[in-house]
Image (cartoon, rainbow, N blue to C red; front, top):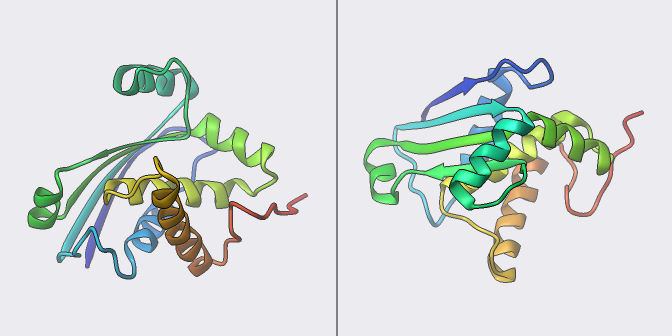
Length: 159
């Protein structure tokens, strides 16, 4: 698969574009019932601050607060035809804050949020408990491929 990840970021705390590419590729690895890999896959990632994320979250979800990641998938049929998966917006401030609150390394939380967002692009969701169980199992599996602990049950010691 030829993967293209376009990263728009000027935040000093955010990972390098190569890291995002690794995380998206990891999210796309394995079998997905909702996506058939084509020869090409493209994802656009924009890293923003809390203020910008609050505006996006309000505009697209009607919520007046920041959030860690927003996903904007392309129509599934168009995904299969073109390999264009969609866009992710990730909030640097929230990822850093959550990593601290959850005692996780920032890099591991960045990986988790990128994989989480990419799975949303593929049509996975966590609205119902059953859907959350499926999505979380995939996230845990993909993060394990990167030697990252289960983000839902473990904290890390990184002092």
